[in-house]
Length: 114
Length: 117
Image (cartoon, rainbow over all chains, first blue to last red; front, side, top):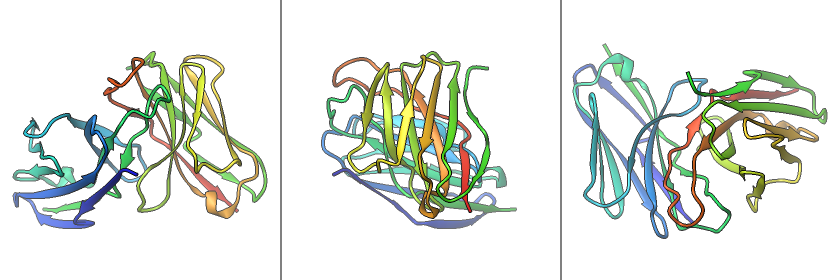
């Protein structure tokens, strides 16, 4: 069974204080690792997809990286509007049902203080 | 803008009273998913439709059912809601191809928050 573990559960930073969020995964035949942002009371918003170890993607202050066992979401000089829960999800070995859902971690609740 | 729309945003029902949640999409995606997310928990896949084919997760209770009358709409029916079914219900869509190369992105709606009294 696929497992996704995110750490820390919560992180409080000062504005401008860079940090990284961790996503460790145990997945048979990884077919994609996804990062989403979720604001309170809203659905997840897609950020990045990574497919193979060594891959990196960037968007504004965010950079996602992938190894064979984990992914990191690096946040550089964050602003208060970056406050949200960041979810990591994986898609594993094809099960034959035509498509597969994502296996999510519980997320990291990030608070950026002005 | 193309998007995934869920209605209602908030739903209050009574213990044991059937309830239906709605999802529509303008992305013309062939796959629609339903996830359940309880407070501070990871979203959990309940089932999905690949075109007209229904795929249930092994641990989804029989109390949960779904209908997809056409490409654009999908419904989640909870036959007899219990207190433990109070959660955020998320609909997602993706465009997938047959076989093992399905890597496409899932786009989520804003969710329906279900309360059971």
